Image (cartoon, rainbow over all chains, first blue to last red; front, side, top):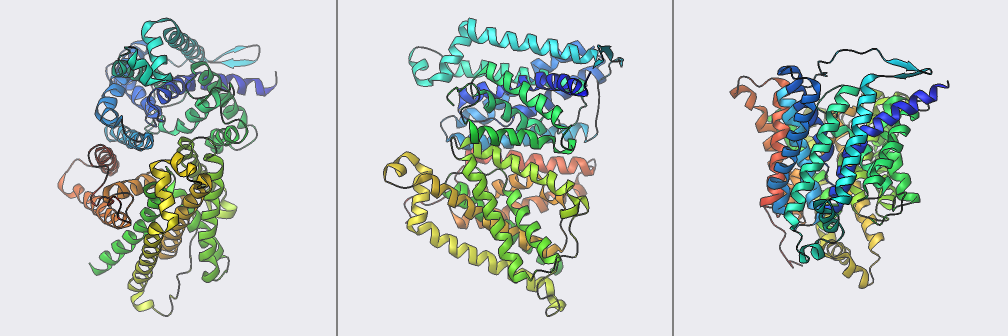
Length: 286
Length: 295
């Protein structure tokens, strides 16, 4: 088997993790009209909540994951209430700047409490199994499976439930939706909660797949952004596809360029999309 | 004590230039630049590497400004094609990628070791009171940039920029080539950031990639919002207050016992983030608000 297959597989796992914050980021951007740079930092928050539950309170990792989901959703909601809500009427860019400030605060709260060291969860180390020459970790499969389920649930929610439809209506035209009786603030609250939960859950996955440190989430912002604009802002399936493409490119790219330049790949994707197809692959209007 | 104050004042001057540069971009034109530190680094490295290679400073300094402006113009032309939101991520990404480049391409940049023995202008002549001399150079640069930008702000060019900030559709309908003005404003602001980098590099005589971390860009934002964006006087005041905040919080270590190095840095950065967010919410006009319709 050519080694590239292994890189592609690893890239799919990375992309699966990336897809969760990318979808949250993309939908919240469309809904609230500003790129929320704190979304990728929610991964860090989730990962450390998971660490607290799993490592300090000895909870099994599944329970820790659930806790991270809930806690990060709550943090995202609190951030929205405290920082973004008073600024709703402001220029979108002001909110983008505030979101950078928020990300900075969250990251440093984590650093203050846990320090800069790399940490990991207390989980039994599993030997990777080999399937037709492909090295597959059990964690990788679990992560991929859980990410698929989360993505499917998010998509079902958006397409089939009243709240999901209200969310899409508000994202499309907030004023029209409000006139039609959609409670804008409640829609925003649920979307923020859901987006935070997706990102927080992804944080635990990332901690399992790689390691936990204060920069783990914030360092992904360029990849998350690349995935979202590749898929077209506001499109959940688009963000998923974008995340898979970015994930695979970042892993396969390490065959061609030194791994230290991984971030440069996401950046290149962004520049390429802007130059070639500024509306994203699916052509959704931003 | 005098030496300390001279050093602090020099760094305030460098920060003031960065803030003035961001003020052209965000304060006047409404462009989000999250990578101010990147153009600071471009200026610093370009000039430092040229000077170490033997280029006279009279050529190396303008080259640093020029390369910073050119890099900014190129990025802005790509990023501003569709949506302004993209400028934010492109500038942030540029800062990150540039830092990776500075770290990894040791053949050019010295890598993690940085660039050393950067020549200091007229060092032989003023060696006795060199720091004071250099402070005067920096203050002269700040004064010059301030006067130029202040004139520019009141000029027809500056009025167009402010019109674009308020409503670019109206500006476009009035026949202004909005895209071109934005690219020019972005390049101009980054040229000032490049100048700040040059003064910084030739002051320390040594630069390395970790001096150009992304949080530095956030510090510039804080200084600008603190002082009052849109107004050059505010940019100066904001830089002074910011440095007071950063330097002052350093002494917190002596008062609060359990603050270790990492915790102190984290607490300091938390403070910067919180102040930025609170200001954005509570007092977006800053300490010295831009006077409406002043000219």
